[in-house]
Length: 461
Image (cartoon, rainbow, N blue to C red; front, side):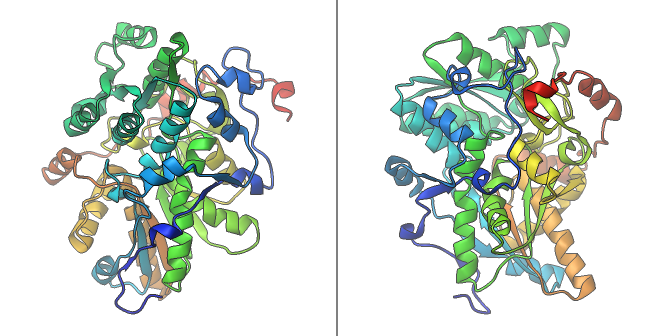
């Protein structure tokens, strides 16, 4: 149990979750089907087999509540899991708020983020089925770092296409990926047909996650010895991340507390889902209740501005079509420093839960979130990743609301990664070089004009 001075709640290794939680088992309304990008008809497991090992394909379509975590995966997790839950007493004092603020610190993993939770699992399942090469994309570089580490541990070759603007902004992430042994290219690149086509139209293109996905999918589709791996968005990826929320539930019990508000930043949805899905699962089963806030950049406002529609997961239309909140598959977001939040769409499961009313979306500007990150660093000592600053900013706003209302609420957020390799962004912020980007309505309208036309027969609506 916690007391008036406890700051850190650490579970013993024996309390680490032994199974992933699949929220699809508790959904009141099932997810819309996934469609083939060529036919726009529902996909079958065999349609996905060229891209993913069958074990992950079956997890993707599963409605079983739990999936056992293989012992070799648990063994690697033990390097850094269970991750600590921290009571942010320094931040509470700085804000002079009656609210209690907690954060789950996923920055303690070797690559410094939540991403290894699924990278390790995906590398294991690929290795188990004899895969020798994996291709992937990365935005800010956290996913590329995590997968390259996991591939090194399971002796798999890894090729990473990194969004060009982040490739230029974050050289130390590139160096980490190469240190783990992966091959990395700035995307769009001259290594694929998709990349060459984009560069032919715009040689100075900043890139997007949609473009990088196209390149990585193309490599996997054209090479029998290569599978594709995605660090967010897909159902099995979000499921692997639920070890975060399962641990947090146990740690909140240690603190003799329960969150009134749960907050995570959202790009593709993985760290957000990892924290909140086990809590939403309790709500769906009638066991507990909390407000859940998803925070995104105002420059890429998928949840707050994007329609809930079927769209391609990538720019070249090679990846499956899913129903999600989207800004259009050809939309290229401005070059904000939160590179992990620059995806044009949102995870189908997160989008579905928003549509059902279980999530509150918020969009914030870059300067506000960096101000929050600096305030957090000075109060708690940890310099957060730019993505995590979005969750911190919303948590601060909620704590100040509690101060105004005299409300002693409990706030929980996910610190999804540290900012040690993002100091260039902080230098730019301190030097007054960062700017806010407004929602680019005309560009998004053009991208949304390219949404696929899906028949009622295909989706069953």
